[in-house]
Image 1 (cartoon, rainbow, N blue to C red):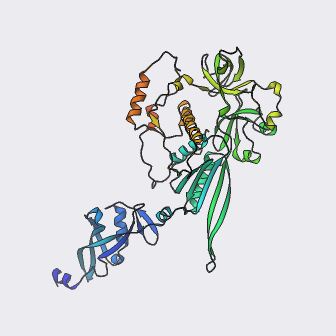
Image 2 (tube, rainbow, N blue to C red):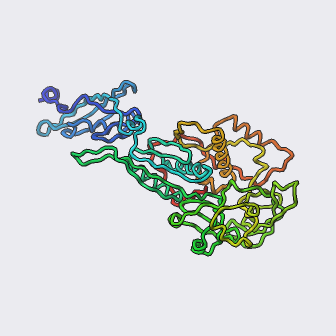
Length: 485
């Protein structure tokens, strides 16, 4: 028989369906790959073509030569695929045929989008708390989460008065978040579970899991007093120390000798202790003179600094001499923040055991730039924030002012510490009015002296803002990311 007669007698497409249905979730824009896998695919992509071909059961009996899409309107809910197949019909006779298959796109909600649409439906929750007076730790933790896309599996994020709650559809995702937190902050956590339902016939149960995470209440620039035994175990450090930064361990500095030590999180939680004073207790001092003593340890230089309280100007001539590690940063005329132990009253057991005669009057912590702050300069940069669900009750007026103050302090920390902001994504401001105001203020000068060494954020450190793709894999996380709050 000739070719035309063979085609009339034999149909090699028999057994291959000419119509089929594929399921599409409009919430996450993914297609269902049976039995229960949802895969992302763009129109006329290789992934979508593979998915369509897997729906055709008879293709394993023929040889597939070519496959491609036939253009259809995107909103038509129809996908047409042109197939070219070959099959041996008689001895040494191979027949080739071209035909098309039409797929109907049917909307179906995936399990994850179903849980999102149902309010208060979650399988696991991570409750993060810290018992301190400010939220600067959570502001920095939020930036780390955004930088590493650690929140991509959350179904909801809720902000509470003293922390943040993360909700997940799977327990494994909550465990992954706890592991991330343990890598960047000193934490301890407890696990609890609640029975939701059980099937007596199959002996299966449905639970909700809650992970209660507590962050150590020691923050950057805090003044701490270590127990004598613990201080000796850290390399003969003094008991009165400054916290320089916090990662998964607490980094402490002896201002008197410039020796430093790391307090591991497991050692801290064996016998936890509160800070003696936090950054809210620091006051401003005016630097009168700086006498370098010689010893150098990295970026720290030991010096005797002559200071006076800013609040004493015009009232008295009281001066102090403070041993400090900031010898390389301070010059006469600068302003520095520190703790005034001469007029402070602490209720702390370990502090009361110290020899009061050998305690310094002043402990200097870091340099500040009050003149630049008075100008209230507009920032030409910004940071991203998590999309959090706030509490049902709006914060009171004083609480709102406190939140704004914590944010301003955090922004200042980013400006003044290049090492601190190196682990944070900083974006260019897309507000033209703000950029214009910042440029005008940069050109304006007044009669008041402005600090020359004020650390500006350069354009090289800023990123162009982009939307975070929740479908992308996590960025690699450095094990030594430091939490500096």
